[in-house]
Length: 222
Length: 160
Picture (cartoon, each protein chain N blue to C red):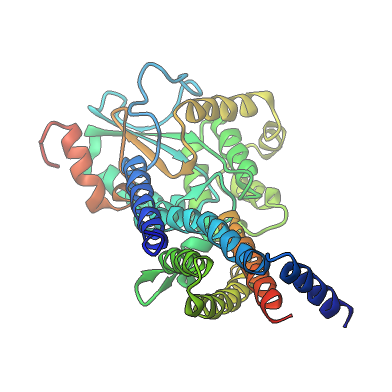
């Protein structure tokens, strides 16, 4: 009996390892958020949200993004393509989810986008930040680069600089963060389509997004 | 010299008290238990890799940079999966060695030395190439260092 004991222990541990792996795969299958829906239980986030596209579109794609996160930068052009493909049938909402622990300039970038938003140019700054992500990501202080972007977008630079540290900007970032926290969003990018979490990494490409949006449109294609 | 004397003294005490076998077995038993921490850690990292979570940015600093780097895959196999297999190997060999299988002890020492060298290489990559540290990878490194210490302790107890 004692001869077989070590082999029995090894077999037991192997079984436990397989069960652990199975459980972990099961818990991560949805791709990101712990919540199955972003509907009524979560706080609404900053209002009004940053919205691009037809406000009455039947499909809403809500992205939680970090301007310094490389995968968010990769998703950006794919979202642009899908927006032009679906036109008035798709609206896109952007929510701030700066991951400050790992990205030193993420919060400043979020502030820059929100400060531009106070002058009605959120999406222009959003695009600028993603298109130039590699330029400013590793800067010790990215603020001067963001001020340059504000200038190139024709913003009132003095107001932009003041707004970077304003309560209005901080509040918007905080409210989006509170919504993300309530939904259990710990990674970026995270995408919800009509209040349902989209599986990662399927939503990272146009080809992956298309079936998800079509499903939301009840089977009608683009 | 003084260290050798200490080990020799411990061994003598163990022999006289009839506990030599117990004394040289406990590092194996401890190694088996410690390897389970590494196994759980490596399984978690493997699943993160397989499900694609490792290529996202997460609140856990550094892991996405490390796990999505080109060094995280060897011949198409996630390095974390290789780590999981190695830790399971350590557990199996340490358990067998604790039950008196002499060859298992030797194989365990060889496996742990390979893991130790691999860990040094991975720490170098994180520090000087990727420029990011992943906490889960650091936990794995710590486990390997402890295993190395236990293997050294066991061999010194045996040969002192």
